[in-house]
Length: 161
Image (cartoon, rainbow, N blue to C red):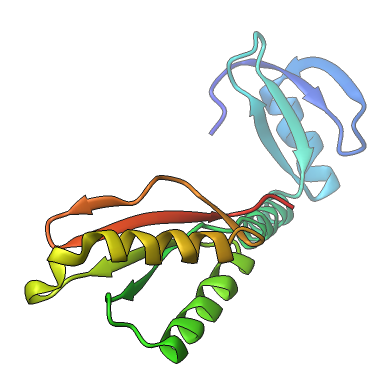
């Protein structure tokens, strides 16, 4: 597939063999039972390396797989409360928020209102501020509580370790 008449050749050991005809480089690679791979096509003359191309592709895919495993995507988990949320439910949901923050995820805390509950906005803000204070050891609020229609929400991000 290399169409340039002269290429710079690098041995499988990493030694530079210098500039040579493409046909000679291909013959040299065949004698060693390896492939001639163009590694720097934009250079003049192009740089080609004698290597096992199948092994090279396999190692590249292994590196890519390892990089994908190492990266952690941050998810936004949502926990919903109501103004009449009981103490046990509150503790249970708070425990889940702490678990999500410990796993490195963001948590969106939503206070949802139904019917006439919307008139007690001050109690809801007090409830959310109390929750925010209890979560201070595990996360920091990314934004202040904002009202969106019949709900108030804010996002908590995990603390940096």
